[in-house]
Each structure stands twice: as C-alpha cells, then as structure tokens.
Length: 623
Image 1 (cartoon, rainbow, N blue to C red):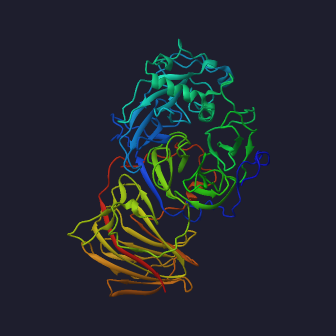
Image 2: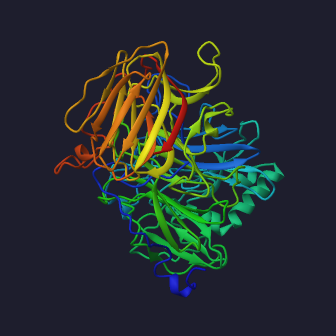
C-alpha cells in the first residue's frame, strides 16, 4: 500500500529508480518497453489537406482520447501555423481499432470575435482586440461519456492578443459542448459555461446559444451530470480560473496548475497530476483536495504527465523525462504497484523526425500525453493507450503492452504464418506512419506463406520495426530479405543492446550489403533486387565482433563492433538512417523560440518514390 494520505501530501508520487536518461540522444540511452505499437493517426500536410479545404493547418496539438460505442474518439486543437496564431479550431476523428483512423472533421469551427476591451490585469494598456479577430481554442478536456451513455465533446474559445500571450489565463469567452453520435455526426454547438467574470454571458457571447436552450432531454441530462462532476471539471480550471466557487482546487497565487489528470490509488485516494511537477490528493473524488505538493523526481521540463491504472492493476506514468530540463524527450513509462513508488523507467517513443512545418512555439519531439480519463471508456485487450503530438504537427496514438516490461524470455522464431495483422507481433515495437509502415502480406508469387513488408513513401521519416529476444552475450540471428522496390531509402538492420548500444550495423541497397566497423567499413558483399536472400549472423559480445553469411556462400568473419556492447537484445529493421543524436539541438546560444530559425522542409507535402523490403523467417538462438 502507498504511504498514508497525510504522509504523501507533500510528495504525492515518487520515482525511486536509479535510471536517468542522457541528454545526447532522443532515447536517452534507456531500455525500451516491449510491445509498443505507435500509429500516426494524422499527418499534417499544408497543400494536400487530409482534413479538407485548400490549405492544411500545420499546428496540431493537445489530443484527447475516449472509447465509446466500440470506437476510439480523438480530438485535437488545430491552428493555421503556430501555437498562439489565430485562427484556431478543434478537430475530431475516430477509429474502430485505434490503428486506422478517419480523416478529421471540424468539431468546433474558427470563430470571429467582437471587439474586446482587454483586461488590464493581464495586458496592461494594450489596445482593444479588433472586431473580426479569430478566436483560438484551448482545452484540457475533450470528451465526456455521460452516465446516460451520451458522448459529449468540449472546447474552450479564447484569444491571444499577440503570440506572446497564451489563451489559457482566464480571459476566454466560454466552454462549448456538442454531442457526438455513434455514426460520427455531431449535434448543435452550445455554450456549457460562460466566463462570466470576464463579462461573457447569454447576451454578449458570440455565435452559439446556452446549452439550456436545447430541447434534447438526454443531452441536457448529460450536461448537468458533467457540471456536477468535480473530478471531471477540475480539468477546466486552467482556462476558466473562476472564483465563483465552481472549482474545489486549493489555488494559491504562487502556483499555476495546468493539464490535470487523475488516478485512484489502492487505498481509494485520488492522485491529481498537473504540469510543472504539481500534484494533490483527494479522498472524495474531487469534492475536496489537499494542498498542492511537488514531485521533484519527475523531470518534466514544463511538459505534462499522464497517469492511470492499467488493466493489470498496476499504475503507469507516461511523460517526457527530460535530461536537460529543456527538451521534450525521451518519452518514458514508469510503473508502480501502489500508485506512489514508481520504478522501471523504459523508453516508449524514441523517434523524433525533423519538423516539417515551422511555427511559433512549436516544440520539437513527442509531447502532451493523454490517455483515457476514468469514466471515458476502456478498450478491449491488455494495452495502455496514449495519444500525443509529434513536433506539434502530427497526432499519434500508441498502445503499450500490459504488463509493461522491458525484456522477453523466449528467442524469436517468427515466420509470420499465423498472423492476420502486423499488430499481432506482441514482442515487437512498431513505428507506423501513414506513408511509411510495416504490414503482413501474403503474395504467393513471392513466397509460399505470409511475410513482413516495410513500405516507405515518407520523404522525411522511415518505417521501423524492432523485435526482441532474450538479452544475450552470444547470439545467432538469421532472416530472409527481399528487395522489391528501391525508391529513396535503403534497408538498415541493426542488432542493439538494452541501453541502445549499436555494435552491429548492416545496410542493404540496390547492389550491395555494407557493414560498419568502428570508423572503417569492411568490404561489401553482393546483393540484388527481385529475389530472396538469406542472412545469418553470429554475434559475440565477449570478442566485440560478429560474422555474416549471405546466401550460404558470401562470408565476412570477425567484423569488429562499431560500438562496444556487453549484451544485445533486439534486432531493428529500418528504411532510413539512424538519427538519435540530438546534439545539434543543444548548441549553446541556439535560438530559444521554436519554429523561428529555419524553413519548412522541401517536398514535405508529397510522397517520395516507394521503397519496399520484405522480411521472413526471423530466428534467434544462443550459442
């Protein structure tokens, strides 16, 4: 059991592990969680907009997740280019499996505002906000599954006079709500709660009516249930900041609690988590709260933390445990038996591509992690589901296998014959982009049974799949590979250690198999497209070397490790070069404001030439 309520107020959660990330790599040199499948639900595109319209909006952030009527529901904030740049809107999409997502549709549209006399307490003597200025949406709660089984989606209309000022300081117009129906259509938009302390009410707020004007009794019942739920509405304080008694949080002038979420400990106490290491406890589901405490053992660097109880009864926190307290990586998960003592830090999302579209306050990396808030559904299967944005432009959904673990006990013997989907690969980690992904394919003209295919049409990223085997100092690895089509990329194969050591690196291009050996490169071996090749490797960490046999006749022996490793643990298949080095982003004196010092990436809106590699009969064994 956790410490008592009183004993844990000052520090409601503690990380007790010894592992800490290094700041030079996106993965932080941390062990990887096993069975992490990452899916790019939405890929921003400025000229080929998947959300419709002539221009794609390229600032996409703050996603929220729910599970209702056997579907996943995902909402996110979208601005045209940057974080505090109007216009803003909220988008919504859905999925039957959490893997394949619909195109987004507008949940709350861009809205023009009347002239606003800016509050002096926030903006001093700044001139009035001009009539016709577009609003910005900002909210930390996207969905509510009501006791009567109605699904509500919510937003908060606000504004930013300049990009320096955020929309979440109590100045906004009000919180809006509409019902989502099972077929994906939505009901009318209403104001659920006005920001009356800023002068907004039924007469002054633009465009929408108050929810009580609805004639739908079930919708009204759902709204009233939400307004009465103090745990749910604690997510609202950041935008409202009302002093009318609606909120039960013990707010002080010296704290600014943002991005609330909560889980319930085994002793019944609710743990509330916020950004900036803030936390508090409640014994009555949010009716009252302890004073705020701090969690100094979580290095959040201003980003948020998501906590929940998983299906196995254990607890998990997913967040960016920043090594530099400046950057939003690496993404980690830590776990706990009692909801207080957390340990076993494992990396979750380790791939950070270049930012394709520049914009003010677009921080680099995966960020803003949200799972499914208690009461908003629980998908079938043993997985922890989280959503987040990548570089504040793409929206991702990830499922983490439960129980969360960083090792496997059995060697690989994978011929893919019994799989209906790539997501059946339980001891694999998958990085699934919309334009670059792994899949199971069964083409009898190429093979007698199914195989794994890596497809890549993404100009600025890669497809990637990594398979785990027991941690070994001496291991044999064998697989078959077929190059069906080569576009922009090569197949890079690495055998890596548990702390991301890279002793073995093999590259397959159109004609050759190349190897890294320290600072040199051994002679390449011949390779050709359009047929299967067998690859056999013997890896000996005690001798810091490996041998390779291609097609049973082309052999290289005793290739020196590129990097030292005492043991190895996984094989990585990737359609692009390794890119974990983050030192270019840590240069002293580099610009501090993200998105202001480089151009958009060329060709980001269009697919590159297709690259395809097939993998089959992957086997590992000790020797």
